[in-house]
Length: 383
Ligand code: CNA
Image (cartoon, rainbow, N blue to C red; front, side):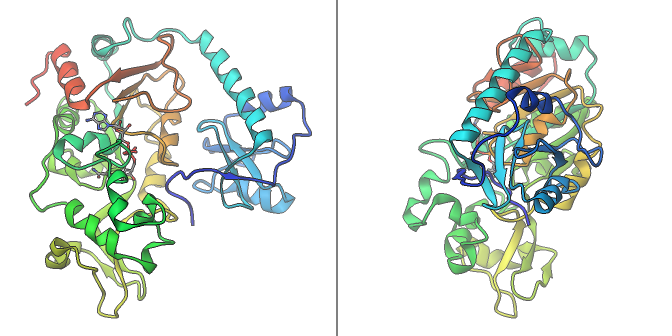
């Protein structure tokens, strides 16, 4: 139904030029809810500036597009353009003009933000937690949190999984996890799965996983939204009801042909360890329920994001390139005054502001080191 991963935008021919003034466009950027319901994840129709919610909510933007024949929409939070005709993220020169307008508007708004932190560093974040009695932290985490456990991420140059897929001669690296490619050549995926399948006793939680567990022990962890499929949050002891496996799980599987459900993928453990293709009794391919390109995210993700962010008083963004949608949009689900702390090797998030003025702070470096430093400044024992 929907795309999980962001892909390189296509050149689109369905939006030629805007018929409204730049001012009207800028006014529409200020809208916070759908014209038809109260949903906050919204898209602006670039043909008439109608505001509709995303396909993950009630799909009002798509309904509008079909009814009016207006294919191209813009997401203010992620700054992405989507075309329902192309069925893809898109770009072209006219869209670039709108992008620049939105970006300038966004940047100028940051001038009015009050500084939230005394200092924009680890010490400042620790101080903020203590001084403001932070008690509902939500963490958005990605593959970078598990690299020190020995699991490669996707995109790190040299060590990332994509870099090392060359031997499979794939048409593009993401093909290994793409529903449109997998049935025609499933072998590379099962080869990759051999290493990644959790519970083989190969990988252990990192210091950063343990830091999240510590936040939970201190009673101030509200939720962890993970893009990871390694299950290390649970191994670290973070309660399952506080972890949303946004990109699915290896735990369960199903047959792509007869749709038989396999509630425990480890029944195939011997084949998995050898990197063999797993087949159902009907001969169909058995695919673990991790989310591939061109698959929808699990229902529990959409259910959970409806109300969990309302009282979040600090967002931690850890070890993610923040380029996979709709996950990356979660940074905008918190209130406008909620501090957003990015713990990563580099700055991520197109719309985050790291100019030491507002609510965003980037703590750059290895996430284990930063977790240790945070614990130190909070005077907590991190094992
Ligand atoms: P990504 O695109 O590979 O980005 C990882 C980010 O983490 C990059 O910005 C890195 O610079 C950064 N990073 C890497 N190591 C560290 C470190 N030690 N300290 C601080 N920063 C670090 O991965 P994303 O999570 O953004 O992409 C989402 C994909 C990756 C999800 O769909 C996952 O399923 C998928 N994935 C998961 C795993 C896993 O489960 N461990 C491994 C590989 C890929």
